[in-house]
Image (cartoon, rainbow, N blue to C red; front, side):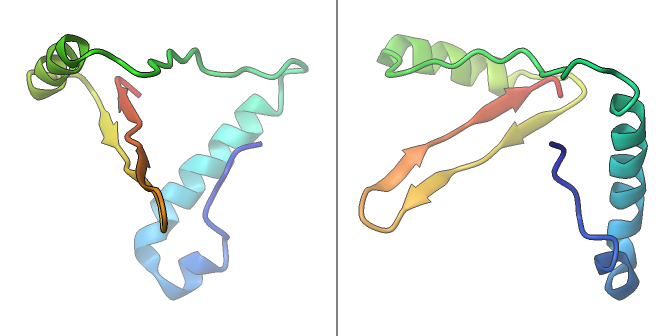
Length: 88
């Protein structure tokens, strides 16, 4: 499954058009493979303070192609996670 912007949204907001086209090109490409190609991920659960500081230093000095940060929240529990992806 590849999440994408609904094509009708591009009719209302042209800024979504390039992203939608890219997503559909990716869907067409990945549809040519029988197996599911999932990205490799590493999850760090309950890191130490030193690990957090080291990772923050890596992020702050990152000069690669992409850096994505998200904050997951819950109305009662507050911040439940901060996923960070470096390098696409």
